[in-house]
Length: 335
Image 1 (tube, rainbow, N blue to C red):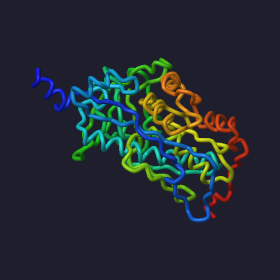
Image 2 (image 1 turned 180 degrees about the horizontal axis):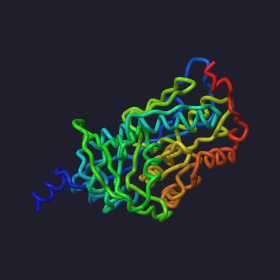
Image 3 (image 1 turned 60 degrees about the horizontal axis):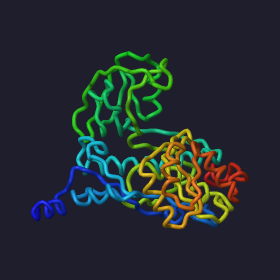
């Protein structure tokens, strides 16, 4: 019994534990050219989750805590190593910051050109044909004879075909090396059976945008795409006069797409605890995760959002100036 207890306290278990992380104000993390930024009252927090590889004892304790979730490791990371998972998550963070900047400038009326060097696979739906052909971390660089440089080109190439069609993909492995060519079959899109679906989640590799201003966001060692909406709102607040939050403290989570759609991110229960502990007045969350956030939010107001426009309307409702922010020729011209 003593040996078993000792082993349980020190031997790593094949699980991953999600625990409450931190809430960080985006304002000090955003840099814009001198003379181009504006000060603002209030705070826009981005939230993190503490991801731990627990011992057996820690996993057991996690199952007993309401604000900790414990999952089998392979559900979260598949067959990737910790180092590979870390690398993918850091890439996703870099991409999310670029997408947030693009959405910001387009919200302010600017035109933004886009380029990339392929499409990074970040997830594959289990038990679809593509599950046998590609792995998370692979990069798709061509569909048939057509090169694909960024995710929109991949989507266009897939949607030009039909469910059941076989497609040839050129793949570059995550760790580098010679490309390979695989063939897989498209399935029906569950939301519209007339549309084809490859069955993968993707992001653009080496994503590049031609922005009118040089902006940067210091995300530190945090990985993943879940701060995208927070960064977009923080950038809008920094580049425009007035206060987007009306002086309130607003916590935000959710990946944002190039179309301004807010995507679910996971770990919302833990992020709700982090936001609550930071004293946030409002918590903006993807629509499908509102219930999980409310269960851990205490007295903090939880608002579900599906788009950037939803988030801006929510901030206007607490006294923010989102409804009066106009496209800025000065921002778009870079002058």
